Image (cartoon, rainbow, N blue to C red; front, side):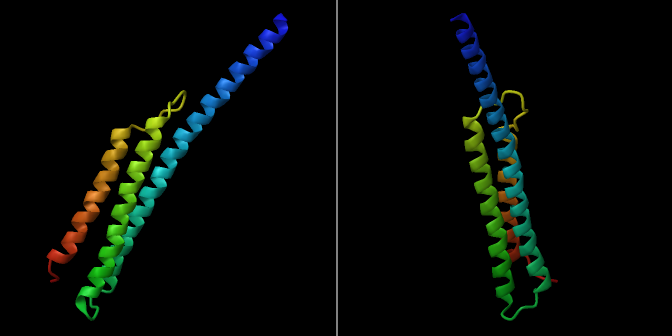
Length: 130
């Protein structure tokens, strides 16, 4: 009987260790996913700026701004959504051995990119060419 109890305790310890490692992997996957979404946000903002720069002399003139604004606002939405999802996921998880990202840092990054994209969208319409 004693051997069975020792095996059960060892099995439970191994199961808890695997669960802890899985939770750490999920924390790291969430951080990588957030970084991927932020890259996507920057790509959308960059496409908007490039579109505006390349097709600035569109006819009608507001069309290039409108298309550029759409891409820039898409980048803002992606950054905002990425921050909310990462924060929500990380608040449910406990890190065991992995160093988790700090939630305030993720929030500052997501909100910063969102605010920057919104300001850039406004600047496209307010600032005049040449």
